Image 1 (tube, rainbow, N blue to C red):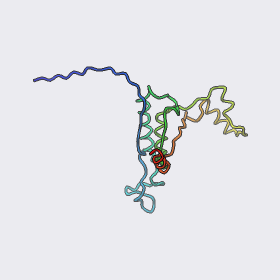
Image 2: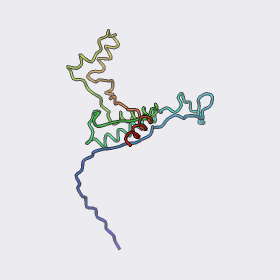
Image 3: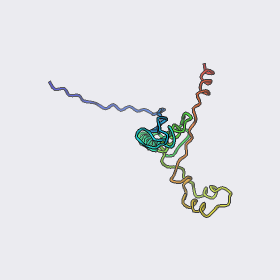
Image 4: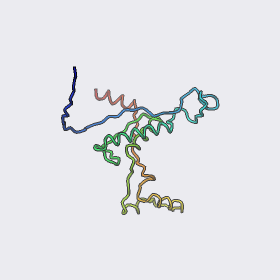
Length: 167
């Protein structure tokens, strides 16, 4: 007996309306169980307890980059506040994870137009080092085309009262 399964593709037109992504922080340092010198049981030294590790930053950057590729037809190349809203709990490791994730999604930051360059310098006396830095920036708003993206802080108390007002 031979069974043959054939799949016939069905073309469905649809529109992506909403994506919710939920994640925890990336790899972090230990929260406890360090000796008096700040070393864990493997002998690795930790300066800060429970904070996001560079490995965790890389993890989230790559997850964000994957999202950039997966949703390239749905989000702009540059951050648009009408498309992305980010909420984090008020812990350093969670905010740093969200920012690392977003840097992977939006790898290019804003570029100033030539007529904006004269307005992009605060009215202060500039040192020679600052003038060199301005030249290095070129038309980028920030170094290395960094993109700043707001991360809103989730406050459980505010959300608790909001839920009771709705009821």
